Image (cartoon, rainbow, N blue to C red; front, side, top):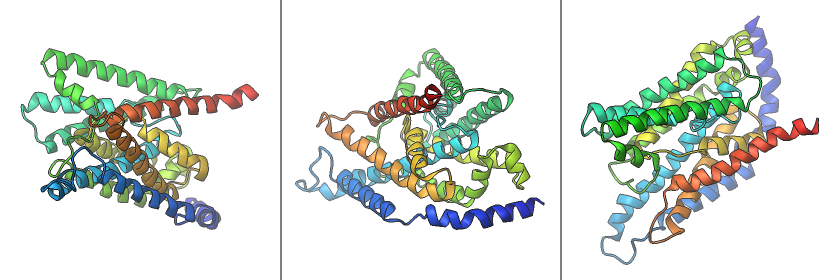
Amino acid sequence: MSKNVIAGVENDSQPRLYKHNRIWTKSFVLAVIVVIILSIISLFTGVYDIRGQQDGMDMFFITRVPRTAALMLTGAAMSMAGLVMQLITQNRLVEPTTTGTIEWAGLGLLFVYLLFPAPTLALRMTGAIIFSFIGTMIFFLFLRRVKLRSSLIVPIIGLMLGAVISAVSTFMGLLFQMTQNIETWFVGSFTPVQVGRYEYLWIIVIVTILIFMYANKLTLAGLGEDVATSLGVNYNRIVLLGTGLISLAVGIVAAVIGNLPFLGLIVPNIVSMFRGDDLRSNLPWVCVIGMGTITVCDIISRTIIMPFEVPVSLILGTLGSVVFIAILLRQRKPRRLR
């Protein structure tokens, strides 16, 4: 019976899906062109004069090209992580910042520094991924055991959990005199990115491919455990897979770049407002808009007080907090009308 149901769902939804949620539309092509223009602006934005110096081209490929590539990969990673989290939890206010996942990644980095005096980037990334996975699973298990009447309570619980984990990290940093490492991580910035320090971000391409391969099952999981199980999807397995992909993306970004707040909240909500909740057709949009958003924030961070540079997390956090408040007000508005 479940096979017939799945076949019926596919037969009914596919024509409508391809008609209304086509990927290569004029608007999508325009979005891609805008992101390409932003990437070119990023390549030629900076204090160092690459055209007037003898080693300008060397600096261009050592710093500018890796930084722009890191912007694109990081924007796609954090936006995808937010999209998958929102599907699994059925809550539009959920993303790595509002679930404590990013704080767990920071705790993992701290543990790696405690175990290894001079850890490599691979060790830091591994610790961040493992602790991100543990923290995200704890959050999901808590949501499954506690019935919440309001969707606003979910991010509040996540923020409280993140605050507790952040306090633990701060205490351990003070206890073992490693506060400097924690402070450096909390200030997410692309300034240190150069050749040899960002290549692990290319793993995000593999994460993107895996999310696209399992997009239909993740979308069904977003309908709830009962519906997903009735349609023949192993709900627990797909949630575990989604959590693993989220942790992998967040752990890599946390180890290489640092804390980037609210990016996974802004982009998926903007895309969902215009295109619905189909993961397969929304994923390219989420990646492209995520790339554009983080690139704009980085360009602003490099030019607002030039020749100095503001951490991109400051610009992104300011923008994200405004969008977060706007989403909260938008969700409360229908209730007042009632």
